[in-house]
Image (cartoon, rainbow, N blue to C red; front, side):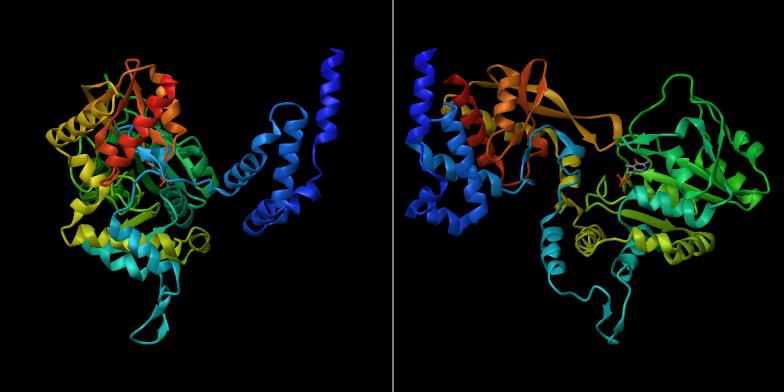
Length: 454
Ligand SMILES: *Cc1c(COP(=O)(O)O)cnc(C)c1O
């Protein structure tokens, strides 16, 4: 005990002052790179851990430099998604196409965001994508906002405030933790009239709830769950009939905005056959940036969209210039028949044979480097609150070893790799690993496996 105290005192006495260290050329270099205050703070931390005996002084400069590097490293980092979940909410949902990324760079500088270059007059930022949207979806009018939650809020606020909106009890969904339909409805100032039950709602339930204060019927796609068994929902064409008879708006919150049939996901085209206003996300199945897309069909829909665009809330939820650029590029790719260049689209349609070939290539390379592994059949998921029960057959590479420790090592590696644990094995799904990431992934797996063997 006595000795320990003495050695602590010895250590304290021999520790240099912060000011002395700062005068040394090696630390002065760090000041030039990271700024004086950060370096002072890092040195203080290092000296404190030397005093407490946690660190020794032999590697002091290297330890300070590494603290500084860590302190200025960006918090937002590129990660490799090997989870097999295409629209991974924690990983930023849809990865953008190369064209969309290039468009981001254009919008980052000065651009003609709100300038009509031909006439030299002020232009509308929304006009940059309005035409693309109406052509792509064959409808009368379109509007883009910050995200789909904002699109729904704006729809209800601009069109239904102070009036009643009829919605099925089976569709009062919560999406992504904080977007609850009843809350959004309250916030908009529209009065929600719930009809039917959790599992069954018929067209007649809507019909009977119509009053002179009713403004709209709302259908909400139950994106992230399915009610199975004894169920019944009113179809959009039945709702169309009710809306027509009472001169009401038919609003459809689609969520995903699928362009073609995937599982039981309703498509935008189907919705537009019946609804006046359709809303969905830009970064779900469309495969673009975070955005809320509003489409208006027919005269009624076009009037509604015009009203929404003029509402003060539209300014508060307006789309950002970077998003707009990426969205324009994504929509152009779809319109010109280059949807296969959109990562989400490619992943959705990747044949299992291609996945298998890639997994086999990884497997051979890893085995050559002494990393034991095997291939197993499995399934990928669409994710992002889309198609909860739709599985895509896939081939997984399972790395031999303690699954959870391997997954942690991969997640904490550089770049971080997100794996999936299945049946107690650490699995990597090639479906969601982007083009060009294969070699980096193989290196990361080798590093993680080696670290565990130590
Ligand atoms: C995802 C989703 C939303 C929210 O969309 P964000 O773009 O995340 O704001 C709203 N409604 C439905 C039905 C959804 O699936």
